[in-house]
Image (tube, rainbow, N blue to C red; front, side):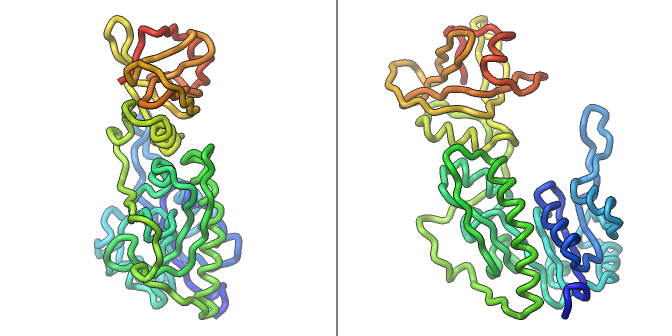
Length: 322
C-alpha cells in the first residue's frame, strides 16, 4: 500500500503533538481526520481557546472531531465513518478499547520517554527532575494498561546538566515528528518487529511519571543543592517551581523560580535563608550549599532576571523562603 492510500486518523492536543501532525501532512500521508480535546476557557475573559492541534487542523482543512466522551456513540459512528487503517496518538488521553482497537493496523502512540521508564502524564518533567542524563521517544501499540504496549521504535536523547524541561520538550517534539513518519513507513513496508516491554532491559528501578499538580511544584529547601537545581529546571518553564518568600514584616508572597545555578559551599545557615547584595545576586541556602537564583517571577509580574527584579523589589538578608 502507498502512503497516499493509507487512511490515518490523528489524535493529539498540545503543541508537542502539532509537529508530528505537520510531518505527516507535509510528507504527503493521507490524514483523513483529527481528534482533539474540546475547547477550554482560558484567560481573564474565559474565552474558549482552541488547542494547538485544532488550530493546525483548521488551517489545513482537516476534518475534526472534539468528543467530550470517547465512548459516546455519536462520536464512535463518526470515527467509524472515517474508515481509518491506522490511528496515531500523540499527547492526547487514555483511549477505550473500542477506539484503539478499531483500525485494521491498530493504534500506536508516541511517548516522550524510553519506555518502560517514565510511564505516565509528565515523562519529560520527571526525567529532568530526577537528574537523568538520557531520555528519548518511543512508538508503541496501545493496549489496556496505559503506556505498556509493545514497543515499535525508540530513539535515545542526552539530557545536559544545563537543559530544562522546555529544551528537552522541544528536542523530543522535533525528533518525534521524524519517528512518527519512520514508524508509519515501517508499517507500510511490513518491517515492524515489536518488542514486549517486559522483555526490555532496564538499568535500575522503573520510575513513574505521574501528573504534576501545583503542590508537586513546591520547592523543599532542605534538599541538597543538586536535587533542588534539577527540580527547578525539571519544572521550567512550565508548570514552574515555586516557593513562599517571607518578608521581614511576616507577610508572604509566592515566587516562581525558572533558572538557577549550583553553588556547593559550606555554611551554617538554616535552609531557606537568603543571602543577597540587594542588587545583583540572590542566593538561597540549601542543605549542602547555595542555590543561586537567575530568573524568577513575582505574582502579577513578568519573568525577570534576578538583577532586574532586585532593582524594583528591595530585598535583604532578613528575607527568607519556605
